[in-house]
Amino acid sequence: MEILRTEKVTKWFGGLSAVLDVDLTLEKHEIQSIIGPNGAGKSTLFRLINGEMQPSSGNIWFNGEYITGMNQASVSLKGIAMSYQITNIFPKLSTFENVRLAVQSRKTAYNLWSKSESDVAVNGKAGDTLKITGLYGKKDVLAGNLSYGDKRRLEIAIAIGSKPILLLMDEPTSGLSPVETNEMVALVKRIAKGLSVILVEHKMKVVMDLSDKITVLHQGRVIARGDPGRIREDETVRRVYLGGVRV
Amino acid sequence: MKMNGLNFGKTINWLAGNPIPLIVGVLVIVPFVSPYKALATQMVILGLFALGYNMIYGYTGLLSFGHAAYFGLGAYATGIVLIRTDCSLLTAIGTGVFVAFVGACIFGFLCLRRRGIYFALLTLAFAQMLYFTANVWESVTGGETGLRHIPHPPLAIPGLFSVDIYAPTRFYFFVLAFAVIALLLLKRILESPFGKALQGIRENEKRAKALGYNTNRIKWLSFVLSGIFSGLAGALYTLHIGFVGIDELYWETSGRILMMTLLGGAGTFFGPFIGAGIFVYLEDIISGFTRYWMIVLGPIFVLSVLFFPQGVWGTVRLFLDRFKKVSLKEG
Image 1 (cartoon, rainbow over the protein chains, first blue to last red):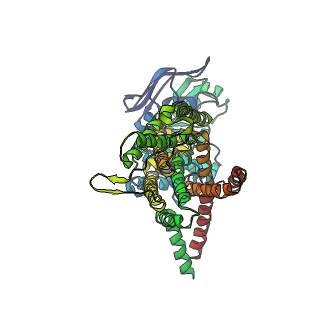
Image 2 (image 1 turned 90 degrees about the vertical axis):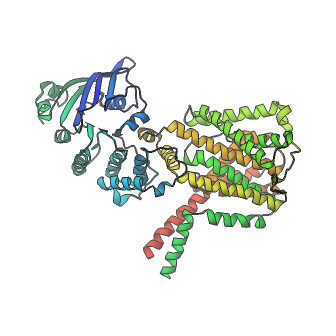
Image 3 (image 1 turned 120 degrees about the vertical axis):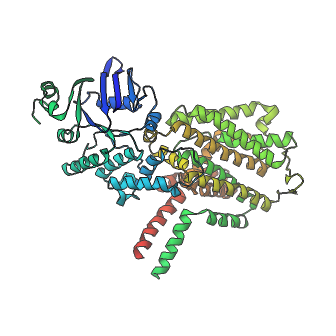
């Protein structure tokens, strides 16, 4: 079943096209990677899908619904979450509160009366999310005081705390050491069960390891797509992106 | 000894989490130790104003430089109703709060179209607009001389009871009752999912939006609630001094409430109330010696912001947290 489809999605910045006529389909429970050199339009494409930016033209369907033109908050409530390349957390709130806010976001924000401390369902889910991401032991630490690696985990925890159907991950391993990168790959595999994921990533090993399907962007256009084996052998991809090196 | 230390630590922790009984206890004593009772009343009223202001500034992270508007709307509306109608006391206060609510709805909606410094300047501009309006609309507001001879109706519910509340001690407790209700309401609101969302917006609005929070509407609601509490403070202030001055709408009032909030600790629950108390008390003492009391209070403010950026209450809280950790280790 198709979970996401974009049709000729285009974004112009002045005379420059950041994303041009991109068609993309994502099956349910698939992990698809988008790769391409810096400036290929990967992050812009994410922002078009999650409603942070509106496309100049083109259409986007999610889970059978037409979501083009919806604002970011509404898209989020439909079930698309994003984890950011540059850590985007609530620094002066506890780690637990960071995730609790994400879980709570599925309920009305206009509840001025009940005590959030005693909402067992929300707090339980937040605790579970922290356990999955290995942060439960640090739940009372201020998020801003976490180590960089833990902040990256928290970034993911916030994204999955809102119980998305589709998770957009913008370079989850950005800035991580090789050991931490392996842990992150394991974490992504764990959380991806039951989710559909689009991954933007620069580390080829991570991409090849995780992806069911890969789409290659170059100067805003799709230049190739297919399973990891095919992309590895694709001449155009090797020339523009992999620099002729075999991976 | 260690057990005692732990119990003491626990008690302090509990009080840090549920400060209201302690606060109310202290506030019951304040009028009897304050130099004169009206000063204590002044502290509580401005404390209430600071609590309302803290909601938008301390908890939502929006620097409003125009809260004089809502304090002034509450004050003027209450005064005008008392002068021109035979309404009961509570109706007059209610009208003050309602007018502040309407003002905050409209101004808040418009100011929140912009962020950061532009937001601050818009709040200032709207408040100054009201100031100049009150200044020229003499037939209603009394212009530069303000509203004088405001009657003092008794606190009454027709057919049930009627009490004169204007003796200093009585009036203090009348005001305190409103302040306690406001404290309880605010605490409840700030601990609710809505209150948590406010703090999320303060910390990282973009992420809050990405999580599906309608941040514009939540900020608006916070602004309006803050305006309501400010309006209540203004209404009580009118009854307190029996007069409404044009200065209450002037930007200095907005600046002063910001200073009180910072002094006590923005974003801590009770800090702004303490900040207002300290500010009002110092202002009273120092102005007894010199007209230029700001020359003394200014440096105190600057030093406290430089060296205790968490404010008085925030610093006490930090100290208590450290104490908590030590006592837990000992235990």
